[in-house]
Length: 333
Image (tube, rainbow, N blue to C red):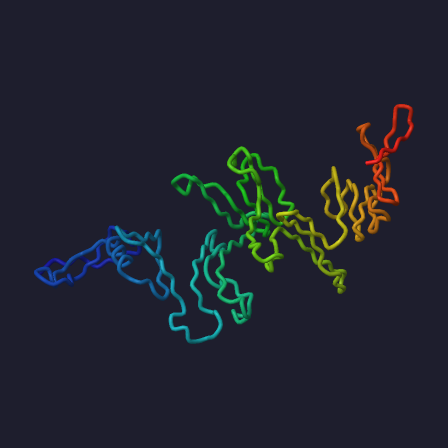
């Protein structure tokens, strides 16, 4: 009788452990008893099989192909019958620190659209990172570099945990405070190939003018509420053009210089253009300046050959100048 090893329960499975099986090929080896290492058998299964149901893979999972594409495909709701909406979705979950569900990638990870039944709001692809951490930490970072190896990449675009965004590399020179919802940080010691830190590029076909699609540009809008009262939307825009470029506002345009940059009550008011189009050069705001140009304080002409030009009733233009004795002279132009 053949010697049979005593059966013993092994609670720890090692990659070098052996599994006994029967050869399933055709030919001389068919039906022979063989043994395989656990690691070799597992690699074969992953290489040739589809993981379904609640299959778990402990440790690292590597997908490798030689001279062929290596593809990870995640399929959910194959039959697509019931229930309705978008309840069954493919996703990848990232869990760490004792089971915290910190990050995920996939469709409809968060159901904030009534099960995907709201028109235009279903089947959204999410990239999520949600961490209970210090304000602004966590978030999502995109990194690149012109060098092989992902460990060499540096941050290029960040969305912080509080929703604020930074485009640029926050290196040791960065002293920003994220005091806006979106910030562009351009370290000119790193970026030596561009003139500007941010640009908006558009295209317009002037075969039909004015173009029906508008001229492009940048616009900033704010909606103002006073409790239940809606005061409306107010805007400012910057628009490039061929004959002129425009600053467009829906309210009087005010100017501030040497300001503390406090958008609630900024210092450094230096004048404004009123609702009537008149200019006010003053330290006090005027919604409707009384003249085309209203000035509080002195107006100085620094060159002696220049002066104030006035037009007579018959249309003649005269320049008023002053000599060294303080005498005024008018010169027809």
